[in-house]
Every structure is written in C-alpha cells, then in structure tokens.
Amino acid sequence: MADAEPNLRQLLRSLARELRYRDDDDHIELKSITSGGANYTSTLHLATLTTPGLPDLKLFAKVASMGVNIRSKANADNLYRTEQVFYNKLVKLWDGFQEKYQVAEQHRFVFPKYYGGSPELGNETIILENLVAGGYSSYNRFKSVDWEYASKAVEVLAKYHALSFVFRKEDPLEYEALVKDLEFTMPEIDPSMQGLWERMLGGAVASADGPQQEKIRRFFAQDGGNNLFKKYHMPTQSAPILVHGDFRPSNLLFKKQDDGVQIIALDYQTVHTGCPVEDLIYFIFMGSDEEFRRQHYHQLVEHYYLQLGLALKRFQLDVEEVYSRKLFDEDLKEMLPYALVLGVVVLPVVTVEAESAPKVDADADVDSFLVTPNELFASRFRGLVNDLVKWGVI
Image (cartoon, rainbow, N blue to C red; front, side):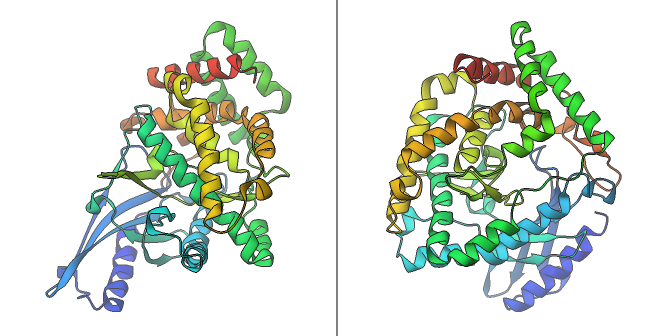
C-alpha cells in the first residue's frame, strides 16, 4: 500500500521505545525489498534499530499489499487475520508446551521471533527477526529439493503437526474453539473467478502431453476446480489439525551447520484446520521434480511418519493412538489427487520468473493472479501428472 512505510516506521518507533532503543529516524534504518516472485500478498521490508551501547537489532517486516479490488475475491482479510492469530496466540501456547515437556532445543519446532505488528485493516503488519541477517537463506525455487533438504523439511513439518495433537491433549476445549475459528473458507465464486480458473486449467492442460490431457480434463469435470480445491483443504475424519497450508521451499529459510541443515518455516497466513497429509503432499509436489520423487517419494513419506512419531513421543503421546499408520495411509491415498489441483493452481506461481510474478497491489484485479506457464512449469507439471497416472491416482 502507498502508506505502508510511514505506518511501519511508526510501529518501529514504538518498538524501539519498548526495547530502549533510540526512536528517531537517524537510528531506524528502513528499506523495501522484493521476494523475487516468491511473495505477492505483502510488501516486504528490512529494518535496523541502532543505539550506542546496544547491539544492532535487525528486523524483517511484511505489510498487507492487496488492494480493495481483490481482497474479498481472494479471501485476503482472512489470510491476514490468521497470521495475526498465529503469532499473537498460537506461538505462545505451542512454545509453552515445548517448555512444559522440556523438549531439548535440537528437537523443538522453531518459530521466528515475533516483535509485534498491527491488525489494522488494509495495513496488517508483522514484524519478525531478520533471519537472513543471521545466516539463513531461501532455497532456489527453480530447482528441485534434494534429499538432505527435503528430509529436514519434513522433519520440521512433523514437529509442527505434533503441536496440534499436543494442543488437543492439553486444552481440548480451547483447541476445538480454535479449530472451528480457523476452518478453511472460500469466498463466493463470481464470474471473474470462474473465468480465472478456466484459464488456469486451460494453460495447464496445454502444457501436458497429449495422452495426459484427457485424463486431466476428466478429473476436473467430476467436481469442478472450486469444489475440489475446497475438498482437499478440509480435514479428514481421522486427525483434524492446524496445517500450515503453504509449506514449500519459498516459505522455508535454511542454514547449513556442522550438524546438518537447520530450517525455519515462515508465512502462516494460510494456517487452517486440515489433514496432516495435506501439507506433506503440498511440500513434495511443489518442491520436487519427477526424478526426485522416483528416487525418494516413498522414502520421504516413511521419514515423515517416523519423525511424527518421534515428535509426539517427546510430549508423551503415541502416534498409533493419535494418528495410526492405517489412518495415515488412508489419508495419503485419499489426498493424493490434491497434487493435481496444486499443479494447476500453485505450481505456476512456484515456477514463475520474478518479472512475471503476480502483482496484486491497489489496482490489481483477479486477472493479476493469472501466470503464463513457462517451460519449467510444463516440465514439472508433466512429471507430476506422470506420477499420478503411474500410481493410478488419475
């Protein structure tokens, strides 16, 4: 938004006073940055607070950028509200559980340090520690993940999912209230959104090999894109939890250390009540190519379930009691078609060049979401469909 920086600077001044830093402009450095096409719901900013005698405090801020033309159609109000709920409520609760059970530091789910923000409509703001300044970086979204990175990422995902099961155990009434509050919702479909979906599907079908195209059309003809998108964002009967909803390399920062890779998840706007397998499928198919899955798909699925069991054990929970292997396998089978929906809706954004990324600022309309498929998308999408055909999913 046009007034993002003045509002953000005011928040930074308040934070500086709270932390006993100087609050004048000479001691608050602020600059805007770009995500290179990885983020399109917020403007991004780096800030540094300086004061003689105190260490420089390096911060990262995101400010809502969607204009009024598109907020309601994209359900953006709910996205921004959800992230406020996550940082102001869930982080404190979940870190409290990790403290209560004395989970060792190396086994904890790590949240980025939250310094505050604003829920003001149209200028929703989140201020976090600047992890990049601490040596973290983003994985190249144009490359498939490798085993070292992917195995660590699903370990982190398992730790994240475990916290929902712990929450349900520790405070079932509060958990049920939050699960209800964060149910997945979709805005009412209007002709412009239906037209957007049809163009997205057309671009994906055109990128597929000839024999695949009819299978794709037939799959989406059964329920329609909108119904399928909603279906796969709903919890199964087995284990409703608070899923991340956008767990892919662009939303994970990593740092290589002597003992391996450290990964911290970001962007909690899409947290909602769902099924654990939803996040797992999302990460695998939005982060990898056909060759990686040929080598590691089953290995990665096994690794996730193993890590979920280990994470739950640290909270004195038995994975077989809260999410048995039988239920997990059933969910995986039921949810695998979700990969094709993601291939049409999300994969174009994952593979888009920075200069062609969606721009959904003040003047944007729904057409701003439309991304022209490129060759990387076509290759990744064909591989995704190949796997689903080979496994008898479509």
